[in-house]
Amino acid sequence: MTSCVHSESSVPGCAGTPRLSSTVSAVLLMAAIVSSMVVVANRLMSTTGEGALLVAWVVLWGVVFVGLAWFAGTARAHLVRLRTGVRAAVERRAAAHADQRFMADARLDPRVFSELTAITTHRQAH
Image (cartoon, rainbow, N blue to C red; front, side):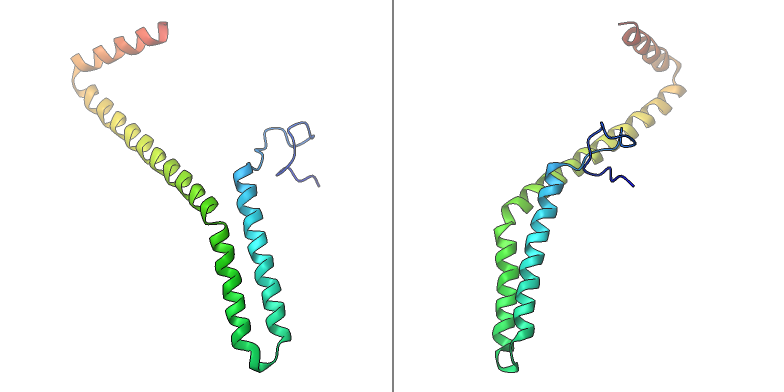
């Protein structure tokens, strides 16, 4: 079985399969690094005695917060990109809906509909 997630389009059976983008790869790598740091801190906690449990919890959460602070800039950039993409999609959807309503209203007025038909025909000719 061939995995097409990271493969090139030259691999048989993977033509047309989208590649994993570099930003998604970076986010997955960041999550893996922070997760591994938390696992290491958890292993250290499990080997300590009861007296050092509070210190181990502080170390664990320190590792989590340092990891979050380390990747805050990258995470913020990805969130800004995501927010911009969502806004653009919402605007496109609203514009398409407005166009559909306008066309529905234009069909009721023969003068407007004939002008729109003429414009569409002119654009398709050029």
